[in-house]
Length: 508
Ligand SMILES: [Zn+2]
Image 1 (cartoon, protein in one colour):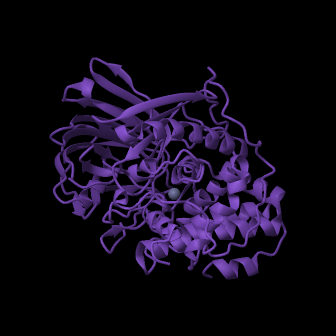
Image 2: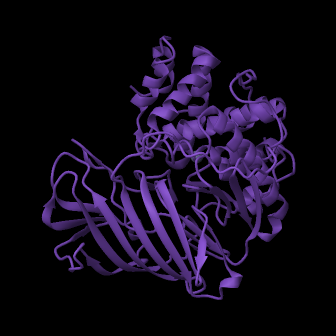
Image 3: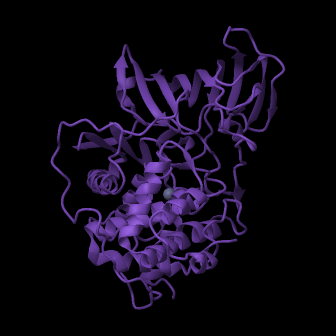
């Protein structure tokens, strides 16, 4: 197949369809012809029939704007959560920031801590993080702390006993790397994800949960960070002419005296995307503000994405529980992958640029994927390095749940083009360090993951499948779920023997 429409589609798909992960050094998608997303007779045959979903409502346009406020989740939230107070002063044009950060941390383990571990993700970018001061809760400078890559070990003057709280204050400068991605600066955008020191989860018996970033063939593979539910009070002061610059964030802002203030509870992180080139569009559905930020050439797609997101939020809200936040920000990424964050998703500009005003388009495939991460990543956490399938296989499968609900005629097209055309191989429970780098990781975790979930559903039936997924979501919201938690939820709703299926898709 040389330059066939299908091959071209696959190439484009390989570059940008593979959501939520790094493919940072690839050829710009814009240099490829726009994909002709037609199913050709050359398409590898896909097996799955086109099942329909029983649980959610059938196709309909999003509800008219309402003035309701999102319902808070009636689930017990973790107590004594870590609190991050982050005061950020940023100059967009010089790509320079100063930050004052206070972490208030409670020891929720059963043993005293004589030191705390802090992860400083910007340390992965040489020269971008300069510590100016580190003090304890009394304001005294801390000495004797040790640095090992991104990991800081900070001694405590007196051990922190179980249930006791303390705080650390960091003062630092960020020289944002000139590197397109979720932390750095490109021609049109400054992104701040994983930009501040954080305290990782502590697990009894295991210790602090920290994994190294995985880079292979100059590409970042998957996500390495594991974070727990925390609360955020963040302020942002721009030192540029404010009227030129727009800020997308994980939460809505309140502006006072030229400073934006944000408050976000029960989130795994707080992110910003700043640009002087955004075009914005907002709709409201069921009290949730769905706000898009795109570049000039994608204004129509910027409107369309809010409608697709509204449909996805409605569907997943019915399957699990309503999206519990006031706002979701959907941001065109000035790079060639997509990324989920709390309260915010970034979708590659290439996906917006290729929007063809039909549902046979990457924007319609990937928006539901990224939106579903608000449930599976944000609300229900998991170890993204060791068990990435728990969020990525589910997110990929939520793409077809979207099509089954709103575009049932395109379900087979989705299987052919998104999954089966790649003839994926690998174990669904591969980690991000899998041999073969990004393509092997995507094939095993995302694509085989979706095939596995479909076969699981076929085996146990729609009723048990959707009941178990909802059970899994409700039981594990605010937590870090594991594969064991997933299969425990399945077992609560089906007595089917899963061993042949597990032998086919899972290692061990
Ligand atoms: Zn994803």
